[in-house]
Length: 278
Image 1 (cartoon, rainbow, N blue to C red):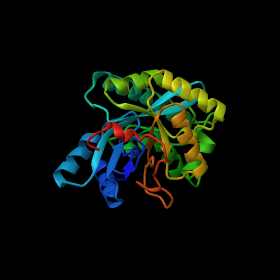
Image 2: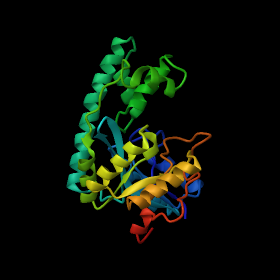
Image 3: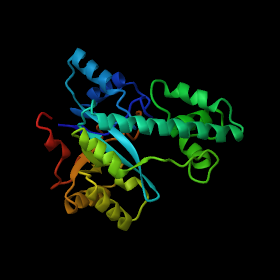
């Protein structure tokens, strides 16, 4: 069985609509896929409907990825196998989306002061039915010739101390985890190696994550050194966390795709063992 438990559609900062994401997952041989859009469950119903209508050989797991604040870091918490009609979950989604709208308006105003034009309207156009993210603003800036690629845009304009940066006001980890668990989901710490923190700080994060109800650790990603995967597997055992894996897919590239290079180290307890029908 091939599991990919972290992916995005154009309901957040991915490029593909849910139907195309599902088609690609089937093409790549993914058996179990989680759609985990940022602070959104907008694409799930469409994806389920498409799978059912076409009788596709794939299991879809309801998911979400919440942005949270911890110390000076933005930490992402993935919720897997959630009940999408839960009132606590829906209330937090609404709160997070309002924060995104406020931040987006301020970001656009700052960028327009630096000479960029029609920023907010164009970012909303690029976002389509989804919500605004920094990636949409980066695409606007790139279109206006300020950098050759999105990485260059972020470095020049959208990270701390740069002209378009606006501090986030996301909820804390405990709030996100409580909402996920209220919806009978599993709370997973996403891509722990990407936060740029030392091992000491990572261990500190894991202690607090578990103390406030966190249940899993994303151990395997496509672009990952074997030693990093083994280390994260070791941490999962040390802190008694379930193990997850996911591509964090946003759009196809030469080096990243759905289901690619995803496997867990030995002696890890997979998160999907919690789901009898998966």
